[in-house]
Length: 123
Image (tube, rainbow, N blue to C red):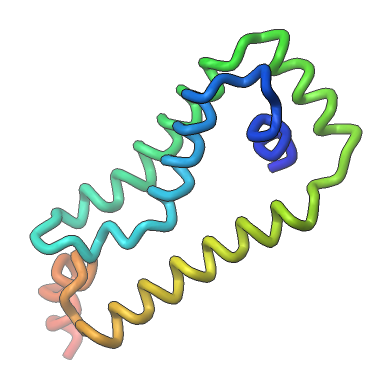
């Protein structure tokens, strides 16, 4: 996490890796499973495949000397509380939105539609 913070602040890291990291983070907290008609496996695939692929590609775009420099700096510093608070706020907001959808539209998310036939067997 410290490397991410330092990479976001570094001028030597280009804008494309930064944007890919932001897109990956927002994909991780976006309520994708609530898009009408989306396949549940697509929503799961976004979290298991797309996010790591975006982060790996973003890290691959950072030049090797800059990577080494960021890793050395990250070992010598603590993660700033402001960055931790920002990450926590994004996750709390995502959980709040997902919970709001769960209570407002019960049983309509992609995961519930996928599991419903199996859950009915136990009733």
